[in-house]
Length: 630
Image (spheres, rainbow, N blue to C red):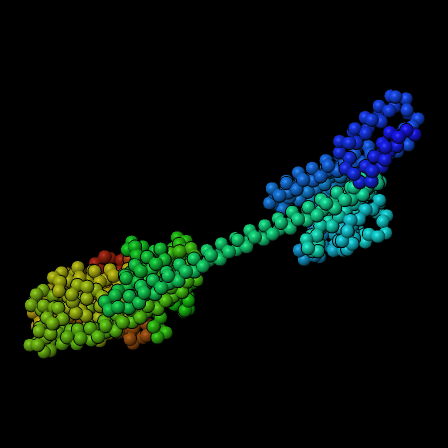
């Protein structure tokens, strides 16, 4: 062998020993070709093996260079992807492409490390495989994570080293997978998952493929860990932002609460009225607000036009409790209501119209209700003190006492007795006395009058000239509050000595109206013939008239314990209807008819004639009134 060939052989061996091939390998190849052309082919036999080796090394170098370039591209793609789901898709696609497998998939260990789940796959054909869920330590994933190193199995289903899981084997079998290789994904020794490639036929997985899979798994681990930390940082940032927002909200609520506290304290200042409570709650809660009495009667509202209506049962439930509750008002209106108690007695209900209230807002509503109770109790105490002063004076006036001094005392309370005044008297109070007194006194104070109470009747002397209008105003207020009270009026009186007479007349009017209808206004003029009766001082003649007409019936009822007078009253009051009278008396129609026949016999009248019926009806009404008049 020539010296040049020997030198070339030495050079080739040195290249294979570790010298960088670079461009020299191509030059050597050309030199070998030149020697072949010169006829020294026989001396080249010793060069074939090293030349083939260099060519193989060079091809491997180019392949690794390509793989590294594509690996770098994959890393760049991973660095540019923040979302974990998208990141995993990039990893499996790059893995399948670089290694040349039929399937690539990535199993992530659940945070509780109780199982692993395929989170991304490419090349899989069945949903069973894509949805694979493997218990911790089982299957191919469990083996790779235990080894903490790459593992290759020629045939997954027959590999005894794998702790086979039935569901995992079923998914592999469904997708016809045979050969598998996997590399662990670790983050500072913490197992994140396994990156795997698979083939549907037996293949030999080269060391270069395993190394590349390991590199991809390491890169995937870094990317997944970074994505998780990014997600944790995002969650932490979100939590911090929420905490800051909560802090700002709480701080704002504290400022609002301090302002609300100051506003509630202002409600307790002297001279404050319930309309200030409604206006304050309207501003603080940004909702319609109202103060109702325990029966639901409106005391104040903001805006003034709002009229909340709450069912009787709900009002009772609110008054019995101590907290703000949600109720549905008339027309489905969403309401929150809190009771205003003082000494265990319900004084009012504070209402706002809102779908929902924050805890602080509910507490504010309850505290405002407490302030309302204190306000009403104070107003009531002041009103009682004022009422006692005026009540004593009214009693002296209607009794005709101390007339030489009452005029001066009345003037000190704002009432001029030398000017026209009307006297109002109510029928005897029965139900809801507190509310009736409150309405009556409030009306008297509003018009500048003096209220009082005598023998169970409310009495007022008002600086007005029209008795009918005065009685109508008060009766209307009672009616709107659902109170059945008769109101009698008389006047005007222009001097203190007239008050006693007008009081007696107003009392008779109230008594008569109470017996006639049970409620409403009444004066001498509006009562008709009853008014003439009240104006007639000689009642003996009227009594004689009654006795002549129905005295026989009264004696019969007394002696024989019958019910002829009630039967006749029921019959005449119901337009002479036997059936209606029977229903009212709860007896049979035949019984009523028999009694009417007995009445006609005793009185010698025909009840079917208008004149007879009218006279008897008048006599019965006069009898009823005379029995109630003082």
